[in-house]
Image (cartoon, rainbow, N blue to C red):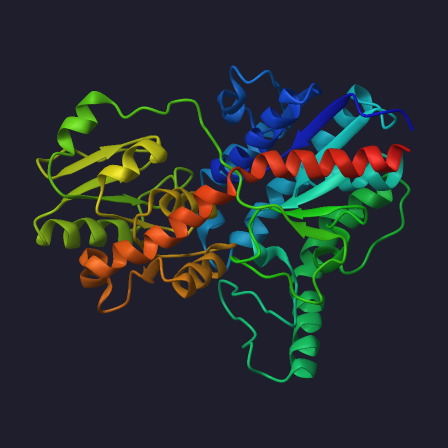
Length: 407
């Protein structure tokens, strides 16, 4: 195999899913590779000015319908809704990879569900590195993740946990993923695969975890080829706080967001706004469709969290990993209202770290305003500052592995 000259970074999902991969793509470009980010079109600005080319992963109509809809964020319907899009993106991306890049000189680096990269790795010989943003993606009986509806209690006997983990995949995720992945595999002349979520989505060559081991210690039944690289530092263009927002933040304020991909305001956001106002604080709400402005409520479609978080008392959010990381880097306490996907597992880990509380907890608001809260969050903040940017480590580790395979 030739040396790596090009890199194709493939990511699907919401802005929080894509942003870390844009950061990794920029790191690869900075190391001299001809680098492209392939992702949903609306995230093209994430790589503006970084030296990274952008290509739409396709299926834009399906992406808009799914990610601007309500089902994607529902605990019961979210997985099925998301795979409607992941299937379309797989079918769109795979022929583009084969037509635009060569296995002999290209490194693929792919998000958990950008499975076109796995097909290109298996069928066409591309060097691929799977990168998982959240530990909940790992099917583990030794360290069971928190799932949106039902989870396997970690204190149950290990043999029972293994049985239930295998059963949950066989009757839960396997029929859904197999309907899409194995159907496309058949069209490509490939045999069907089993255990798609627990085994096949992980590159057999290299898996990197975009989080540190102190956030989620790899268990003995995690992929043997996996390594922790740390949290990526994602920068999304605008980094300064608008002057009018800075002026408005003169009083004590709390940032509230359900995630910028959630099209309609959830009821819990309205309740959180009321709770903030009842305490005499201001509510700064980030949501795609802003509500009416009031003296103590400001709603905006976007804000650079890195810039605004140092100016607020705390943040109430959906336990998305990107938002949680921004809050930890700023040393800001968090109240959490997870709903679907990796959010319940992220929330459990953040609470265990001592940097967050469930929004539903009776003491949540008193905890947010307590002095000891700041001391706890500052410990984690200092640790993240010492560790630096995981995006750089992901780029370095992926390149080192790919070069080693070229020898």
